[in-house]
Image (tube, rainbow, N blue to C red):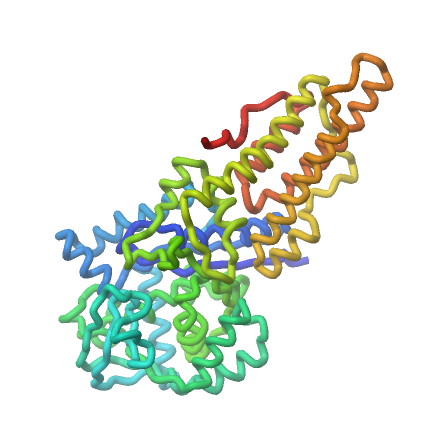
Length: 481
C-alpha cells in the first residue's frame, strides 16, 4: 500500500525586517499540522523560506550600502534561526534567490506566455511599495494603503508585462463553487468570492530593470525583471523539484497553505489563476488572522510595533511561546497581544496547571517507589477530540480540551490525596498504586496529545515517566512573579 503523503507550506516572509510574532503564529500553526501528519505515519514535506526580490529588499540593501544578495544572505539566516527558536519541523527551506527557484520561475513564465496570458503594455498606476501591489482608489483609505498607512503611494508610468487575470474570473468562480472548503475560514472565502465576482483586472508582472534591477530576468527580455509576487509564489512548487522532478511534484502537490489574512487576494486568486494558466492543480488555503495591540492597532513590520518571537523564546522558553500562539489566539479573529496576557497565561496554564501537575505526580511516584509499565494494548494516537479540532484548524479549542483533561486529573489527585494514606499496610500500598496507575496513565495520555503543540515539553515528560522508577523532576515552568 502506498504511503500517504502530506504537503504544507507557509507564505514566504520578506527579508527586509526581523522575524515578527505574526509570522511566528503562521509557521507554528503549520508546524502543528505537519507534526500531526507525521504522527499519523504520513510522509511529510513542510516548506518554509524567504522572499528575497522586489523593491523593498532593493531599497533596504541600498540604505545599508550592501549588495542585495549579500543583504539577503544575512537576512535569510535570521529567519532560519526560527527553526531552533520555535522547535519547527520544516523539511524544506527555499530561498527565491536559489538557482533552482530562478529556473522554475522562468519556466513557469514560459508556460503562462505559451497559454497566451502574458502581454506587454504601457500603464499608469498607484503602487504601494509595502504591499508590492498596485492599488485602485476603492482600496485606499484617505488616499493611503490601509495596510501600510505610513508609506506614501508611488505613481508609476511605464511599460511592463501583464498577466491576463481577467480571463480567469469565470474559471476561478466555477472552481470556488466546486471546492467549498478551498479557503478557510468561510468569512475569507466569502471575501475572495466577492472580489472575483466584482470583476478582475489584469495585473503587472514585471518591472523595468533599469529602474529596479533586483529580480529574476524575464525569458527573452533582458530589460525587464519579474514582479516580486509572480516570482515568489512559484516557491510553493519549486521547493518540490518542479519542473524537473515531476514524480516528486505529483506525489505531494496539491497541498495545504497557511497564510495571513492580508495575503488573501494574492494567494487565493492571483496565484490560483497563475496555476490554471500553467496547467497545474490548485491547492487548499488556510487564512489566519494576526495580532493587535491592546488599543486596537495592528502589529506589523510597517508600523514598527512588532514583537520578536526569538527574544520571547529566549526569555520564557520555546513551548511557552508555542502554547500562547496556539491556545490563546483565535485562528480566525484578530487577537491583541500584551505582556500582561502572556504572563497571565504562562502562570495559570503552564506553571500552575501542567507544570504543577507533572511535578506533583512525579514526586508521588518517587516517594512511593512507583514505576509505570505501558500496557500491551496502549494506544499512542491522539484523541479523536483533538484531531477533530485540528481538522477544523481550531488549535485553540484542541488545547482547551487538553487543559480540561489536566484540570480533571488534578481534581482526581486532590480528591484521593494519596500523600495522606498510611504506609506500609498492604491494602494502603495497593490503594496508592491504583491511584498512581490512573494518574500516570492519564498524564501520559495528556502528553501524547500535546506532542504536536509542545513537542519539547512532551518529550521531556515522556522520558521522565518512562523510567523503571519514576523520579521527581525540576519544575517545567517556574512561576513568574
